[in-house]
Amino acid sequence: MDLSTALHIDRGQCRALGQVAIRLPLRRERLMPPLPAAAGEETEALHWIIATAICQQTRTLDGVIGGKRLRGSDYLLAALRQHLADHPGRWTPGALLAWTEEELRSAVSDGGDPATSTLDRLEERLRLLRGVARHLLDAHRGSAMALWRDSDRTVADLLARLAPMEAFADPVAKKSHLLLSFLHERGLWPLVDPQNLETAIDYHVMRVALRLGLVEVKTPELRRLLVDQVPVSGEVDSALRLAVRRACREVVGTTPGLTPFRLDHLLWMVGRNCCFYEHPPVCTTPGRCWKMNICSLLESIPHDCGLSCPLSCVCRGAADEGHRTLRETAFDTHYY
Image: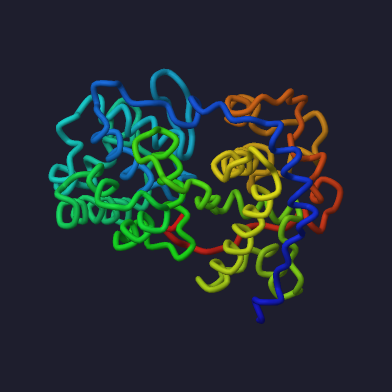
């Protein structure tokens, strides 16, 4: 399959999405709830690095933290914040090296009870976590903030400093761009060139971008792989994610005031709520919402729901079944 001709970025559709996206600002406090002030910048930076490093394939996560039902990465972040607050001494690179699968289950559970943990891929996540801790100890004096201080504060230099860690080795740098966005937005790792950040491309963003028509699939072979969820190679996965990333760059570049961070979270929220892979898109089920009681989209953007997707007005999939049946790549990875 010739991947160079299999994908086409529709720049007109990118511009149209930008005009909708700019009217939907994010509620930043929902996406980046801070740690207690007593944690300090070093611990908070380490928290974000570790949370991002092990935040992949979070479909199994579901439970109650602080009296609220959460799922996926929301659950992961809230559980890790709670563990840090309860066990601050366990949040140093040296201590993280000694974490076991049991402690990781305890850290990602309801109330610290490992029996309630639904976290899977434990061996993989523990390997990634320890790899981060070892790299910080070996290359940056055991300090998350030192990694930033050792850099020239540019996106390119920080990406290069993250890349030696297995957790951030993705050729499309999904976790790396997400981490830099979080740390820049929190004021922990301010960047001198935030305009060079890219949208972090995961399976939700891929699926929504394809259904929107930002990226058009031009060959029947690739379309079959996506629609039928046939496992693909890393080359195919990277090619599609890079195409979606270029399309997102077009959306941001033609929409003054829109940032990759805002666009990423809008597409991601739509993907995990309105256009989720386990149910039909809400645009095809008038008056019905599959996630009414656990919707995270409405907590994150000002949208008068009406049981509708905020992007349906510009989405090709809302009117065309051919776009609506497209899915993300079927690729097993710790990259996203």
